[in-house]
Image 1 (cartoon, rainbow, N blue to C red):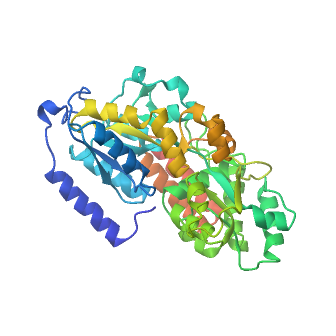
Image 2: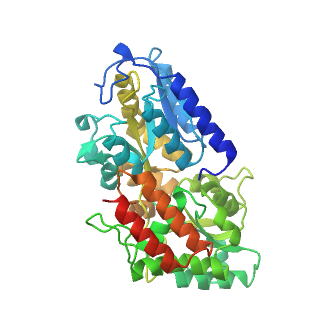
Image 3: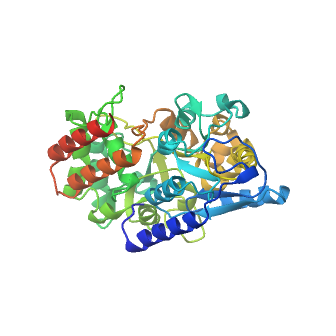
Length: 428
């Protein structure tokens, strides 16, 4: 989901022009002033990434049917997380009221809150004790709530259960076991790719790099908030990916994979293992002919160097733009969208991870989505990405260094030493 093409750059540039044209003080509608009170009722806009399931629009339609004078309109941003952030930042920098509600990646909370681009939410109006606590923490900045946790996410290892069963292999807990299982399957099916994740130079690479480092016992940033990537553990994690590409365990074309490219490859039967978010389950399980692996796959925890690995904590939170109109309506809509009924609807339609703990214990849902216990474990033990006010610069530095190592432009030693220096400066 990186910003690379001229078309995307042109779209972003056009977005800036539109945003500049739409700037407004907001008047009595509760917009225009950073940190303005949650006042004003009427139409609001909801800026979000692509609604691949259609369920987001379904819930918006449900809200709109019951709120004739407080309609919500979705503004669909590019598929790329980096491009989404870019447009939201540009919107905030020109103090535009074009966006009211923002669907923020969990790692953007600190940046948007510190810059006063989003307003503090009344924590008492959300039953935060009923949410998964790692998800709640991603919505807070300096112990105050700046967003509502809507989607959580933990990385899972999707695997072809039918192919592993055929050669007597179990889901791997380590990289070595994954390689062994792949060799056994490829003996019968030479054309199948072994493993893929998200390795294009965009936010997904930051996630996969973080997971590799943590799964080898290292840290990107330590408990004191200091850079920690120049370590033997971090090198071992990065080297696992580098070696994977060099030895063909990771197909060469996977260097171009974002979430959707990898998902399509897995569903086409081209991969034995795939590191992916929960949303892939519903799509890969479809029996309408769009998936060649329906009924043939399962999920397991991510593998690590010497045992089960560690997922990067993902997900999205809903925040209210400091410059948006009708903040009271926006708050009510967010409460509606994060309710148990809405989260249940979203889980059933998309298989995305809910943030309410009760849904992971629901017998009916667990029967329909047997991966829920594994997913909950993944989320509760997941490690966050670096929490930094200058997160955009931090993730770009990680992407550049990791990509250089994966493509052979730099050795892992050089890449990590340079990244250590960059992060030390950015995290001051």
